[in-house]
Length: 420
Image (tube, rainbow, N blue to C red; front, side, top):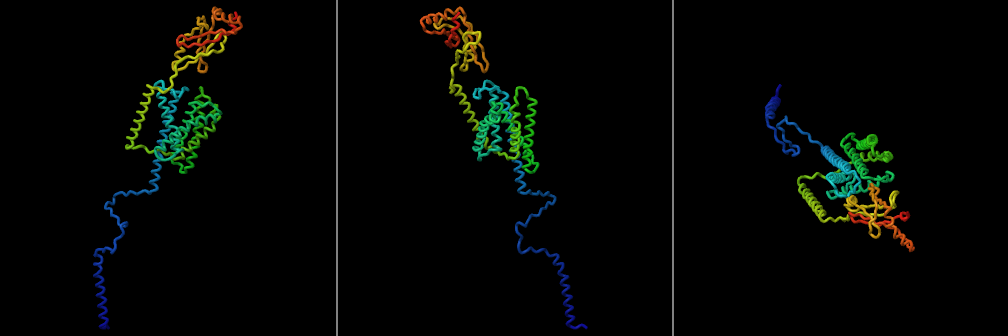
């Protein structure tokens, strides 16, 4: 049975279900309501309407810095390699053009001498100061500090390399060729290590340094061995054989230093610095030209007059009187070539003699040999007889004069020549 209360309850349930079914489409079709609070700005990203566009992945900050440092180190190493090798080549070229032991302060006498001078100055400026200041000795920051370090290392190297070679080579004589050889060998060893430093394998830096030291020592030993086999004419390898181990160790050390260090060179000048550089070069060029012109017109150098010095020495076998000749001044050798020698007694009367000029070599000076004519014995010895009768000891004398330059000297004739 259905009561009035039950009919009412069923009717209420049916109406509730109809309202629920009717509300479903309204909920689905209704637009989404915006939330009460907007999301943060960091979470709002623009929607990309181009799904086919490739996306670039941004590298990490430490990776970008590492690549930049590697690129900078490679550039500096290549610059140092180029400058050092050019400087070593200039030194060898200058030494090959001027291998003589002439004075370094003598003025160049020709085009070849000028080329050798310019190449020598460029080589001395580039090596070893270029790689020493970049690899081993860095003091201060800025162009002034770098220039001071460069000049200081260059002067220190060329001031110490000679005494060091002299001490280690058992007090051997140090020549310009030896100094050039030591400088070029050290430069090549550092350049070899610097070139090996461009290779980033193995990753352990200590292993790279050890490999560079081994390669430098092996290359030094091979070069010494090949030099002894190929270049045997006029070369004494006695000191090199004795110092073989020291040379190999030094080259290995320099190669390791070149591979393990991080060279630092001044930044390449840009266009805004070109004007200051050009002005500085122009000032230096004008100053050099002005000094050269002033020196050629009013030379501050001491101008020694050209002359011939004569000194009597013991006469060798076959001559009666001998004199050593010394040339002085720039025209001294020319005066000696034009010399015409005559002889006279102590009163100025000509004496019959025969002269012979012996031109010496580098160690022996020229010698003038005088042979007296026996016909002149009465003329030269008469005063000896007169004074000896009075008890005065007198030696016969002979005056030798150069008719071209006017140089004259008085020599003593051996006493035995006056005794027939």
